[in-house]
Image 1 (tube, rainbow, N blue to C red):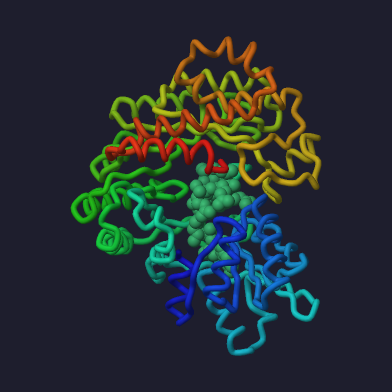
Image 2 (cartoon, rainbow, N blue to C red):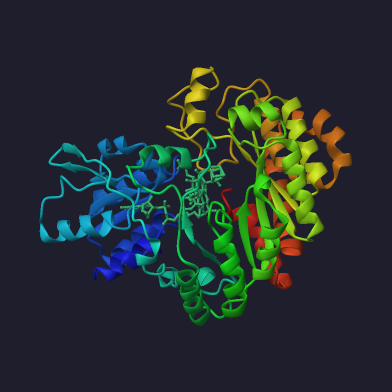
Length: 455
Ligand code: B12
Ligand code: SF4
C-alpha cells in the first residue's frame, strides 16, 4: 500500500494480486502492466519465482523483486526470469528506478538495486535511509478495494514506524542494523499528526472499521510519542487497537497512556521459558522476573494480552519446551500462540545453527513457521506436535500430562494443526475482537483459520 502510494505520486498506475497464480494471471490480462513487482519473504519467494516464470512464458513485462528475502539474499537476481532486485528501502529506490526504466535511461547504477541487463549483473551499493517518514504519503488503501473481504473488513492495519532498536538473533532487524550507512537511524517513527491524518482519512473511506492493528515492531519505543498519541488519538480517532511490546519495557505509566489512547489488546513476545535459549541463543536480554512482572502489570490493569513463543530453537528439548509452557501458564495470558524456529538466511541464528550442527544449508524453507522444524533436533517430531498443542495446554494446564506423555508421540500432526487453528479462531472470536461477531461471521473466522490460513 505504501509503495503503491509513492508510485502514484510519481504518476504511475498500480494494481495488486497474489491470492493464487490464477488470480495473478487474470489480473495481468485485465491490467496489462509493464512491470510486475513482488515482495518476497524467505520460503514464499520460491512460489513467486515459479509464478514469475509462468507469467514470463506468456507475457512480456519487467520483473522486479523487493522485500526481506532479496534484501538479505540479493543473489536471487541470478534466477531465471528475474530482471532486478531491490535491497532494503524502496520508498525512493522504486519510483526512481521505474522512472528511469520508463525513459529508457541507464538503470545499471541505481543504488539499492542489483540489476540484470543482457545477462550481466550490476550490483549497486545502498542509499541512505529516508530520515523523516513524514515526507511519505499515506499508504494507498484503495489498492485492496477489489477484494470484498478487505473493502468491508472491520479490522484495519497501520504502521507508524520502521525499525526496532533490539538485536534478537532470529529477526531481520539486526541484519538491517548491519546494512545501515553512517547517519542512518535505527528507529524512525512518523509524527503523531502524520498518523492521525492517515487514520482520519481511513475512517472517512472505511467507516465500518472498528479495530486497528498497529503493525509496528514495538509501538512504545518512544514513551514521549505515546504520551502525545494518548492525548490526540482518542479525541480524533478513538478506534480500539492492538499493538506489540516487549515484556521488560512494560511500565505502569506507559500502559496507562496506552489504555487512555484506546488499547484493547496487546501482543508480547517471550519466545522461550529457558534462560539459556532465550538470552544466549535468541539474544532476548530479559529475565524471567522481568517477564512475570510485565505480565503482572498487564493483568493488574485488565489488559488482554497474547504471549508469543518460539518452539524448536537450537538446543531445544522437550524439557526446555516444558519450561516455556510453565512460564506461560504462570503469566496467565488471554491467548498463547507458538511458532517453529525458522533460521532465515543471513540471520545470526542461521550462522549459529550451521556452526553448531543444528542446520544443513540448502534445505528448502517452509512458507510459514507452522509447518516443520528444519533444525536437527533430537525431539523434533514431538516438538512440532507440542507447538500446535501449546495454546490449549496453557489454557487447560491439567491436559499437559496427557499431551506430554501420549499425544505428542502420536503421528497426528495434521489433527493437532487443526486443533491449534480452531482454538485460535475461537479465542479471537470470543475474547479478542472488540466488536460483536454474528454467528455467520464466527463460523467464517473459524473456517478461515482452519481451512484457508496457511499459518
Ligand atoms: C506486517 C507483517 C506481516 C503481516 C502481513 C504480511 C504481508 N504479506 O503483507 C502478516 C502478519 C500476515 C505476516 C505474515 C508473515 N510474515 Co511477516 N511481517 C510483517 C512486518 C511486521 C511488516 C512488513 C511490512 O509491511 N512493512 C512495511 C513495508 C513498507 O516495509 P517492508 O516490508 O520492509 O518493505 C520495504 C522494503 O523491503 C521494500 N520493498 C518491499 N517489497 C518490495 C517490492 C519491490 C518490487 C521493491 C522495489 C521494494 C520492496 O520497500 C519497502 C519500503 O521501504 C515484517 C517486519 C517488518 N517490520 O518489516 C514481518 C516480516 C516481513 N514477516 C516475516 C515472516 C517470516 C512472515 C511469515 C512467513 C510468518 C509465518 N506466519 O510463518 C508470514 C508470511 C505471510 C505471507 N506470505 O504473506 C519476516 C520475513 C523474514 C524473511 N527473511 O523473509 C519479517 C521480516 C519479520 C521477521 N521475522 O524478521 N507478516
Ligand atoms: S524485539 Fe521483536 S522486532 Fe525487535 S529485534 Fe527483537 S524480535 Fe525483532
